[in-house]
Length: 246
Image (cartoon, rainbow, N blue to C red; front, side, top):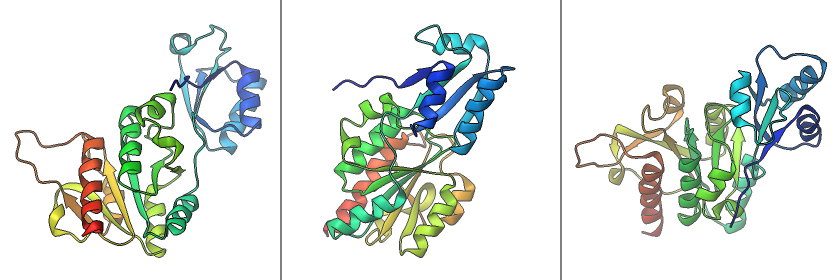
């Protein structure tokens, strides 16, 4: 299965992509380049709450595949994002308590793809990622998911903490990976659950961690103190599977 990197170059092409409703993960604009056409693109980007990075001409030249970027390159999602409600609906259709995996500060698309693959195999109903400081559904993530993106919805939200609160009101409870937490075997991980995974360097951010109901630690016997994020997601997700089967 082949995936093409979805980059859109040139002012007209980028503007048309925005106006056509294409999901743009990030917009790159040359520093100091804010004439009429570029301002029109920036207005569309603001409407969609797209992340905008102002970069040097040299950086754009490196990113460009055509050499005709005209100071503007957009990075588009390889797949369309779902809504959080779509994930809950999928759980309802299957007659199962919702099981959702949330990713906090996971910026490596390989990790994102690997987590989506694990989510699918572990029976999670979807994955939720934040708009900022996060990898999007690029071709790299799609390839790493090994086809799971065709079956597992991924929602992108503005604020992970707010989303947790909204889902708690719908009956979900949340557990985050935390090496200082309770050993995962000692927690009840059945029922409607959201599993929150942070990056391997900083873990789950403080603001998100404080919203969670429990903290789960993966027991480790080695000499280093952190698992790769997608591996941690796999270990915890399968503890959820084990308890649900018990």
